Amino acid sequence: MNKSLPTQCTLGEALIYQIALTIEDGTLAFHGFGSPLVQAALHLAKHTHAPNMVLVAGATYGVNPKPSFLTPTSNDWSMNRAAECHLDIEELFDLAASGRMGRMFLSGLQIDAYGNLNVTQLGQKSLRLKLPGGGGGCNLSCDVEHVTIWTAAHRAITDPKGRRLFRLVDHCDFITSVGHRTNDGKTRAEMGYRGFGPDALITELGVFDFDDSGHARLTSTYPDTDINAVRDNTDFEFPISENLTAIPLPNPEMVEFIRHLDPLRIHERELKHAELHRHFCLD
Amino acid sequence: MSLLRRRLRNSTTVVRRCKLAMYTDPDKRCDLPDLIGYIKEGDCLAIGGGLSWREPMAALRELIRQGTGNLRLVGSAHGIDVDLLCGAGCVASSSESYVGFEQDFGMAPNYRRACESGSVQVQDSCCYTVVQQLRAAIAGLPFMPVRSIRGTSFMQLHPEYRSMNCPFTHDELVLVPALRPDVAIIHAQYGDSHGNLHIDGPPVADILFAKAAKTVLATVEKLLPTEELSKMGVTIPFFYITALTEVRYGAHPTACYPFYAYDRRHTAQYYQLASESTEAFSDGYLQPYVYTCRSHGDYLEAIGGEAYMQRLASWQESNSAWIALYE
Image (cartoon, rainbow over all chains, first blue to last red; front, side):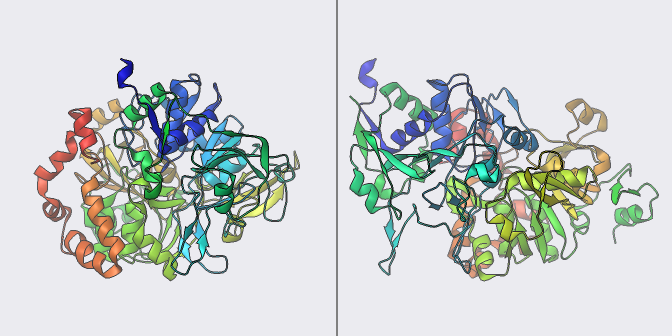
């Protein structure tokens, strides 16, 4: 019955779709823990355009699971329900080190223009804020073939002293995982990393790819954002694609799939409260 | 010193080869205080489980009661286990790859405070680095190479890492030293008196920890006859295990499926107190749930007893019952 199909999608659902679009069919894609937007995106991709993806669930290392529902904690039997098989921790990382892992998803409290990420600590000279840490991100960022970077908190906030705190920063205080250029300017090829590095940076304000120099380049904005909104919330200058487009939106069936997979709306916990009102009409 | 420990010390069945012991005592059962007595001030400790799954929480509460401090923690992705030890002031350094409450509650408050105050030395590591270090220990090698880490700030955080050019390919590699934890502490669903363990569901790094550590301690939900356990399949063979204790609900408030799910309600209370302040956490959490409980039995009474734990077993009844545990 078409009448029950949604006519709008939320920002979270649009983000999930953008992440899903970066996943190729037939690849081994691995989601880490603490990343419900990505977890949902992998299942959406497998349900739609990437049925032959080898989906490996972070924390449980279940292969091709069918979660009962998304939980806020990743090492949960709901998340590896009906998995075809399971990998050991060493096997999972060996797959990346030997070049078999096609795609991984990484985020950061600081993200620089070359896709270096910091989830370890804020403060350059002394520790100002201890972040939870990067899990396996450091190793995987070198080894895995392709990386999708995402954040649902691109919009800069203003602290009580009036300073703007950027998520997309000019410089990371600590480099937890590597992008296209190290702090001393070396490329991935010069470093001899196995993987090709990040090819997408997806935020709640826009979508970037990475140009030939490895620098983030804006390729799309949302129906309710524009270049200026992205610029105003980004600490670094960035080039803009000649073919700047509006992001594609999921179809109603996809939105239904996400709502069924995540009845607790765990993925919205990655979004700031002020972003939760954002909805987009599905034509 | 307990009977078992005296027996192990005098026993000829503990044969030291390549600096790692073989534990062949036919009966390794002991009580929880004796089990935790193996952990010494300043030990390098690997905690089993991961995030909110199968953390040896009863063992860690006993460790806090015994006042064993200055622990150097190593491991992969953890949460309330490491945060609790930090909140009780038992930790000198952390080389975990992640300590937090994921999308459920976010940052780990006690861990964060301890790192920021300098009482816990930040030595963050990364999952594959730890895996390679444990594999070196397991294989009796001094180090293992990794291609990654170069170009990240972990090189500055860990001056013990070395670089070399591969003699065959000339690729630049990072060498990470073998990691032999003094003690690994693991919670499994099943064990037998000989020390065989059966882990149902993701083993996380427990098997690597058990093979690499000098002393391996286990708590289990249920002790079974060896014959029954070996039919299930032995995840970790007895000769790695130093001693073990049957501790029902020993992972609470983390999950130990199929017996019980993650206790979100209790974890929310924990998180709220830990977020408030060190004092609020000490008075509101450590006192009632750790210090004034003389045993794990007292703890179970403090959280609401068997009736309370039954709620966490309801995940098996239906999907909606399972979902309700997260609301």
